Image 1 (cartoon, rainbow, N blue to C red):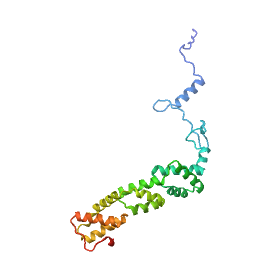
Image 2: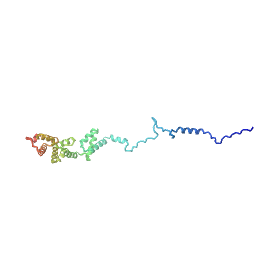
Image 3: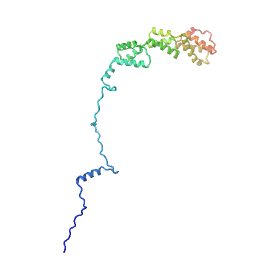
Image 4: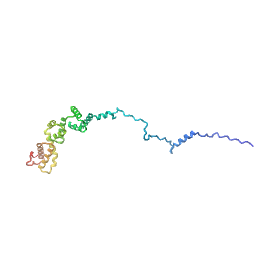
Length: 242
């Protein structure tokens, strides 16, 4: 009886994978999603009470937009505040000294500071009541058709003293004042259509009186306008009736 031959192990037999290789493969497979892509570990964000690691730069005191102690000190300075208020007011339009003084008072600027700055602005020509009065008379006479009395009252309310107001009104040409009254009457003449001449005269003369024109100018202008329109002057009407 012959002895059995032992079968040698096949040479192509694979070795068992190591534990480290299995562990790495398992972690990689676990990170794969259904689409086959490898998922990334989520980023961590700072939780409540935690701050990001990037430092926040401190403000630069030389930056013009930085509100440092210097700027706060300038805003608290009454003279600096008063100067800003005056420049803002004069940028919008020309104003009298009293108008500016009243504005500074409402803003709580001390009287001595206001007087000192207003004197300085007057010295350099930024505040000029005389020039203001001349410009006001010229503008309001042409634009609104105002007469001397109305212009004088407006200048008084603006704070222009009587001497400067008289000087400005003296430059008003009587012919220009009469022309302004004539334009007012021409615009209102249509509203008197259908009324008698006496009523139309009273309405038109009263309108000119409210615009500050003298009775003599008002009566003359209205009489000329009504005559040009073909109306007769009412009996017994005179300047004394104004």
